Amino acid sequence: MRIKRSVSRFFAVLVVPAITVAVVTYFGAYAIWGNRGVLALEDTQAQLGVRQQQLSELQASRQRLEHRIALMEKNDPDLVEELARTQLMDGAPNQVALPRH
Image (cartoon, rainbow, N blue to C red; front, side, top):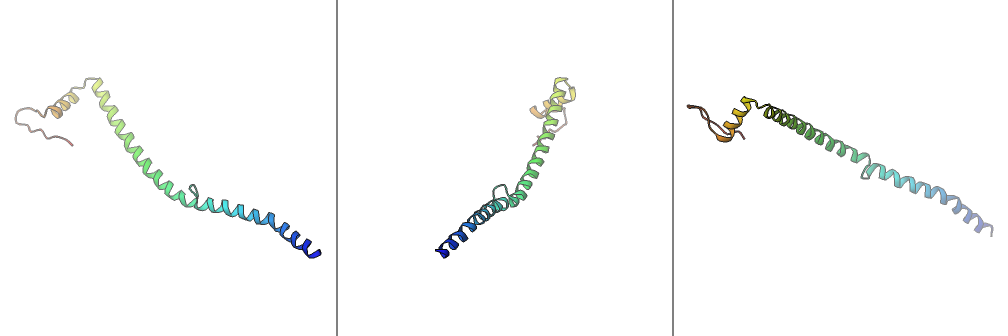
């Protein structure tokens, strides 16, 4: 009887630490190899760099377009001439118009 009690007590004492180790191991592994773990951080930072570059290019493009729109609203004669030459491929005599791509 005494051996049976000591064996059952031994396993009862080890159950809580074993469960604790299992839970800590699970969350620790997820913190390193999980979707949002340490190893995924590098990929996320690389994607962030690419997205920031795209954002800055789009913002520059938007500023250029806003500037052209402001010039159109003011009826800028140089812009009107530029648009006419670009759209109509027409120029003054002895001038050659080349399309911009």
